Amino acid sequence: MNSRFGRAWLAFGYAFLYIPIATLIVFSFNESRMVTLWGGFSTRWYHEIVHDTELIDAFVTSLKIALMTATASVVLGTMAAFALVRYRSFFGRAAFIAHINAPLVVPEVITGLSLLLFFVACEKAFGIFSERGIVTIWIGHTSICTCYAAVVIQSRLLSMDKSLEEAAMDLGCRPFQVFLLVTLPLIAQSLVAAWLLTFTISLDDVVTSSFLNGPGVSTLPIVIFARARLGLNPTVNAVATLSVAVVAIGVLAGSLWMARNERRRAEERAAAYREALTPA
Amino acid sequence: MNAPRVLHGWGRRIVIGVPFLFLVLFFSVPFLVVFRISVSESVGVRFQELLTWADGAITLRLKFSNYLFLASDPVYVLTYLSSIGFASLNTVICLVIGYPFAYFMARSPAAWRPALLMLVSLPFWTSYLLRVYAWKGLLDDDGIVNNLLLWLHLIDAPIRMMHTPFSMMVGMVYTYLPFMILPVYANLVKMDLRLLEAAADLGSTPLATFWRVTVPLSTPGIIAGSMLVLIPSVGEYVIPELLGGPSTLMIGRVLWDEFFRNVDWSMASAVAVSMVVLILIPLAVFNHYQTRGVGRGSGA
Image (tube, rainbow over all chains, first blue to last red; front, side, top):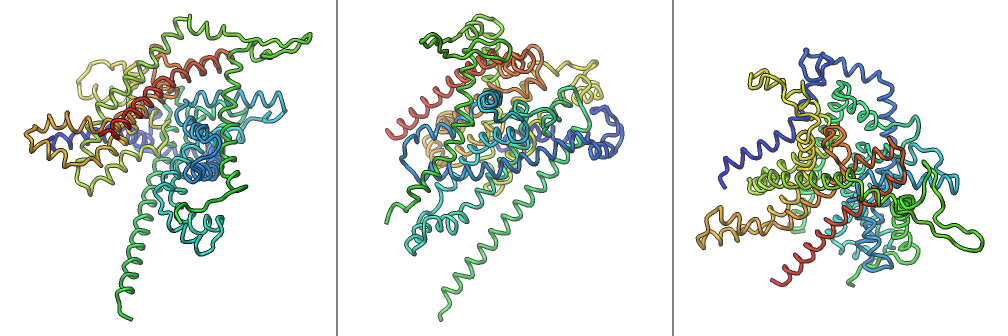
């Protein structure tokens, strides 16, 4: 197929993906309260969100939940990935696989509803989970995010060279030492990737959180969703621009860091070869 | 030594047991609670026990009236059908736009590919809620698109796009397009290009090669992408709520309204259970195709 047509198709595709984000950013610097009519450049909405306590409180809550969710999901996800990759047969393995995959396809309205009804049932039966808020949202997010983390870490474990672990064992390492000293550094990058992925999923979630929050506890997406439902709101544009900026900086820093690591590894390898080739 | 020694005994039990127990407790058990509530008599948010012990006899009380109501009420039936309809339409549009997109990405110079790939996955890292909200500003009656068209004198009065099936579909395609592009790209980029050369050597035109070699070889990517778009879009709630209107019936929204607006917990539970059944159908079809594909691959 001819390349001019191909380039045009790609250009339209990327325009479709990025124009909405660009308009969000442009109109966050709009003086007018009308989000869609340009009234001159201004940073007033940024001043406004800095003093918006509802927004700031919600952001702090979201951040707490996302930190707790990402950490718990990576720990549970690592265990689950190990169970799937290293233990080829155990009682209930098929059920285990189903439990890792199901939360990825079940709509969030169902996950949210069922967890809330479960918490209500627990409250009636045992008197626990009577107060809904950060902890219940955290549990909800973790039950979804563990599965994402498991999938990411599992693919790294599958492609990993097992002979390094075997060598460590032959040299007398105990299984747990092997895990800490050999396996963990080897899969570290996938753990970071899984942590970041689950962190963003949790930070972005609105449906599950809406079911599991309690009175007075709102996450940032819940507040944004409430404002977006009522109509266009310039403070939402300002929040969007800040989040895009953070993501852009994060991605840039991440790729620079990875490029530097790669270069250093290549240099080390070259140095090792030189040493090996130099006659003593 | 072939198999690496791994943790045994308690270590093994912990590695398998902890995540398993967590998911059973906070994923499966809650769903059983939903099922139980969907078949129990309810007065507002109170439910009767399913099993009662009275006069030395166990009574099992199951109520299927919620399900009978679901099946007999045309609104619910219509909503189910329209959810499947919108989700299928979304899948088809994503495929029509996404397949050529992935194809041109995969056939672009190898040095560009990592950057092109990153540009497709980058929106994933920004908030999905905010990206859907962005379309509100674009498609509103006095939104950016209408203002632009008016300014260019292409139209005299704003076109009504917001709160229509059109605005909802734009939002759905926009959100799910990367889910189609990525698996199709992954499949196309590792395709053996010598097969295409062989087809050309045997006298096939480029277009015939595309339809008779490239597309059939990329079927696994197409199926994976279609499932990733179809299944979550059936239960979509945020997009219909923000961009949809009264005519865009979606089952996720009905569940939400039953629960939050009508406070009918047992009805919401019945909707949830039937929604899971609805999702199991495409999944079963997917599994069927996947196993058939494996069979064909090993037979060749």
